[in-house]
Length: 206
Image (cartoon, rainbow, N blue to C red; front, side):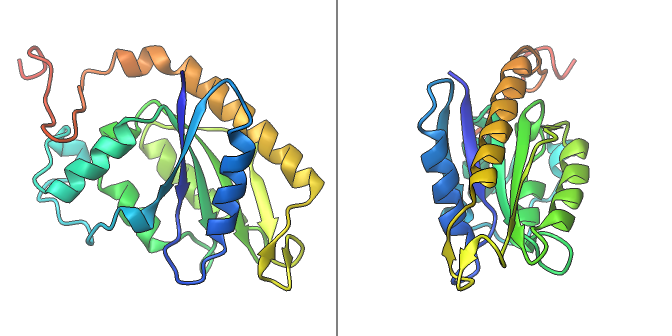
């Protein structure tokens, strides 16, 4: 069965994203066409990118254990929903750092976005789409945009409106469908990602 990771892209104390990721997960687990799991970046502390080679060049061979552990996590999923706030017209640096640690593990996987902020996080999603395209990911068009003014009671307690519940269902439909459609490309990838070893097929070095 397709496995979708819900990436909680903020580690800030008091983050509202925790409530949103929980909502996405609870809504998603009512489905029978995919398995879902929250990936909280607090559970995957990564230093500022410290691999000696860019992920694209390393071909899955990572020097540091924290990178290999992160690679194992991301490689185990077929697609993602990224929950992100908007900070100064962009998304959090901790999320960019987590993305940049890897390359092949993101390839040929679908991704959808649930954003939040004063204007719903639109600018954060615009930038994430560019980055995910460079990672050979398929970003789906539907998204969920949550305003801090209308979706949070007293700007604190998350209470999603009916239209955003519907929007989330549409987003999940697309992420699952695209993740399934990309399965042959993932299977045909020349890089066998193991995370802990970063091994390559025997013919890859020839």
